[in-house]
Image (cartoon, rainbow, N blue to C red; front, side):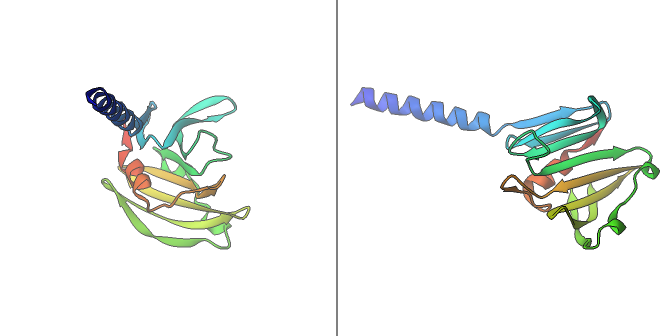
Length: 160
């Protein structure tokens, strides 16, 4: 009986350690900013023509492919005039309530793109502008702009 209890105790310890490791955070630093997410999310730099962008990252739920996973494309514009708001382009654009995450207040709208629900939120920081574009529904997974993981990701953003 003692051996059975010892084995059960060891199994509980191993499973507890495994659970703690799986609850870890992901973090990515670029030369412009850093971002963190829970282990359920994958963070990667955006690539354009094979080159990594230092001012843009994807934070994707359930995988690393922006074409098949919902998530966020986070950009930072040190010169906000470089960002063109596309709200007027979408016929179904609807404002959303402001979202507080960390020290920032995010404002924006939802819209449809090729039949999929999307969103765009922006927040000012100093003389710059954060822009977060959301793919809310892809590959059977969904993301909500007001879920706690998303707020934690937005709150984790830190300029260099």
